[in-house]
Image (tube, rainbow, N blue to C red; front, side, top):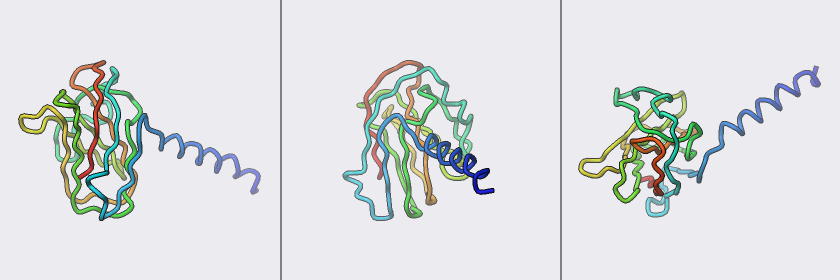
Length: 150
């Protein structure tokens, strides 16, 4: 019986590793994380409509933009965070951001006031793995960016 369960266990492990892959850097955060150094880098690009992940987030905000079907970043929260902001810095390019968290909770962000860089600020971030897509407002726009956790 142990031999029969081994392939299923191996498959779950491989599937779990694939689900944890991202195009760029990973970030691990705990309650007292250093906001000055909690940054990852990447670049936008792709023709995949990020609204395919979700049309709207749990607050009914639209999920828009274009990128890659694979997440750009994985963020792991080791502790619950009362508040977290994810800020894209692409030097003012028109970016978007989508975050899929534990239990498939979706958060979406676009422009921040007069700034075209995307931002998500929210409360009650639960322990777990978050997949992050940083997109551009139009398909196949390639811009370098930094993603700051604050």
